Image (tube, rainbow, N blue to C red; front, top):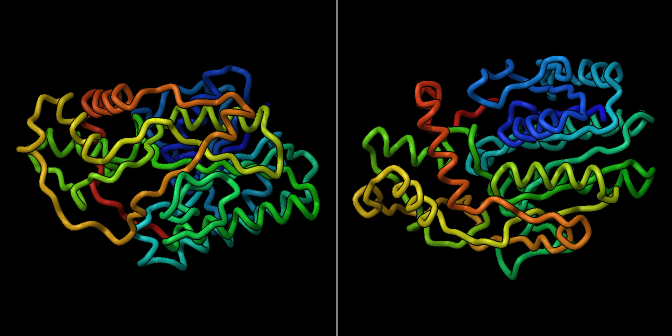
Length: 326
């Protein structure tokens, strides 16, 4: 298959490309707004089946459409998004511009291209409300942040395109992702870096709320399964059966690095963007596509810590706080 990946420099986008190229059956066009990352940010990539274009979804719409017309992908997979919940309160216009408006223009253009067999949008569990039991795909969206609202809006537009013209849209909604090559300001690598620097890890609200943390490779396998065997016009939640709190994850990092949890952590006030108790039900993708998360949490967290240690010079040079870019 010929696959175009938008937002290819994102953590999840990069892992999905690694999965495609590792399978040896796909040609990949990667598109992202920043320069291609160094090799410490992804696995080795065979250049004969991989091409990279530095194009911005907001500023280079015509160039992106032209690149896709030239490549003629069977599948278009979108990871491009403004994705930090807290920053969405400070920059809601940027979030809607990227996560909804720019993508609406792209979807409109691609709806008139016959070569697209699948357009898969990587959405988020944050479109669902925080209350109630684990949400299936039929749960009405009730996002609690500007980020979630912007993602839900584009989801609904894609479904409208499918209903009106048969546009081959698919939507995947994962929870919190983690894994090697993740941005250092995320909880697992940040905890490892903080400990290695001799610092103290903050536990917002005590870090006791049970959440769903999905390894990025399990998410990539789910996306590939939806592309290969999933129906168009459908939403698929992807999540592990195992629940864990941030407190438990930090304890795993401490254990891997040989640090005492109580001595290395401190409780601080919770953050308003947190959606405590938000869980999703992944029964549908398991039943229809035989997908299930395979990587146990302890194994996955230890793998991230090992990556931090292996790539310490490159990883530790990056900021431990999110830096917003319009």
